[in-house]
Length: 504
View 1: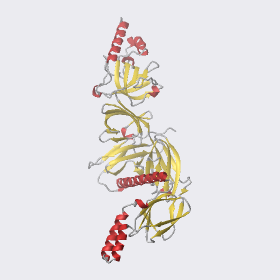
View 2: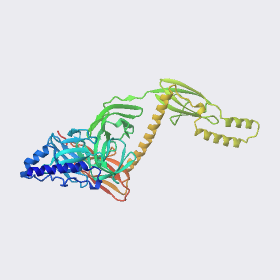
View 3: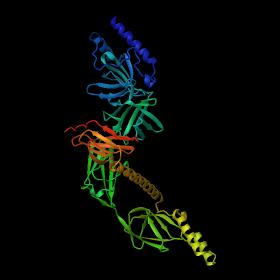
View 4: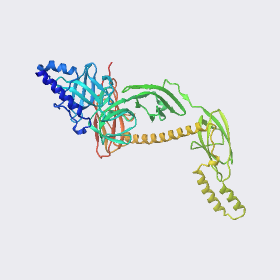
């Protein structure tokens, strides 16, 4: 009779499950069966029911259902830890070959394929902590491999596309199988995100970040480093840069010279690039002789005035040339330097206004003072415009346009980086009234946006904005944290967990 009662209870449970949807309110997610509590990890099953329970757990029978986040999997031990959506309580269930695992489209998965951080429906037999069924919840928010997002940890929000979500105070964040903290997520990381309605409950870092240290970098200090077009920074002494996980082309340049290296960065690991051992490529230059009419014309290359009374050295490549003269139309065009020597001859045409003024002057109808004033005004107007009549392109029009756009983009990026550098210098070196203190772990090298600021405990001046603090210690795994500093007029203290010792 006892066995019959068990079977009847199981059949009732299955019927209830079939009639129950998965779209409950996030604040009221709970187990759907008669026993709504999650199993207690410390509880032991009743001995008298052991035989019957073993039979049911192996056949996929369950007595409880839950909406939860996958926290951790132990494939060797055959266990999965979950966190309840509503209560944030954690519990661990055992699985075996009879456990059913599905994605949100009812396609079968292996336990290896089940993502930590995903929001799932869990069915289990509580007395034995036996996992019978787990499925990615089809009614919940899910984004895979998100590269473009914005986090505001002060407000506890994350924006993905046009959608803004709140981040749960108990959000599960997993990177490379290890549970971590939201502050360890860097803006360059690639994320998968799960939640319900407007709340995010789970995040998996699909691609994280590593670190790059430059060695023997003296020659390139105050030059630029470009890492896969995702990190562009001015080179300084003793840098430790946070870089995206993966293989990237890294280029450093300064004083017309450059060095390039392809480097693979592993998650949370540090790579060193010894610039003293690389072959420096010197940028080639060509000599250009200008012949101008009128001879008093001024020449600007890439926005800088050059002395055309003698041959001018210009780096190989595409450049913007602008030629101006009083009373003449401005010429603006692109020139490509690709040979050791070249000649450029340009004859400017008098402006229509100047021609009219000359005619009036010959008839004695103009006052010299007025002519000069009008001419100066005309010149000012011409300086700010490009005459389409004289604008020319090099033979390969499309290629030049692309290079022009790239150059323009690089200029904007460089200007923005200069602004960021100025801001960072203020943070690191000015005598501000309020400070940001890094109190722990003790004895770690601290870097602010890649630049060394001292050994912890250490502080820097409080300036509102987003910063990355990196902590490094020999023999330990390097860690970085995103800090979003507020505008409140008070000091801030941060204490981070101890760094993890590297295995020898």
